Length: 155
Image (cartoon, rainbow, N blue to C red):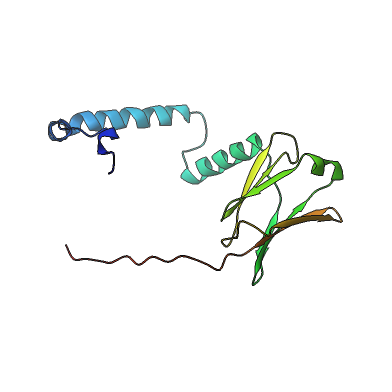
């Protein structure tokens, strides 16, 4: 049974929606937009693309990215990560789910990175090898994809 009682909907919700005044909603939205515009008043005109680029640059500054190359063959998915210092392999921890690879303690301790895999992989049979400054992780593809049919009914 789905726990509908945990949602914020109740019997009075219908009454609240019916008694909402469009003018109050409009004033609220104008107030929020005014605050956003005033924070950018001294800078260049508000451009959505600039805001996206600014947010991306802030994200990358917070946590350094892990440079990796991901590709797949007929039977495997490979992830190659350049590692300059071989000593970092001692603390390195690698985990994976069916579609994601998680790497911890690289390039520094307590840093976590996740890589989305291009295909579903099996739980067992994965291996990792380090050679010539490259860590290569090999994951076996899972060809047993469970399909479920969904019937479409007319309403």
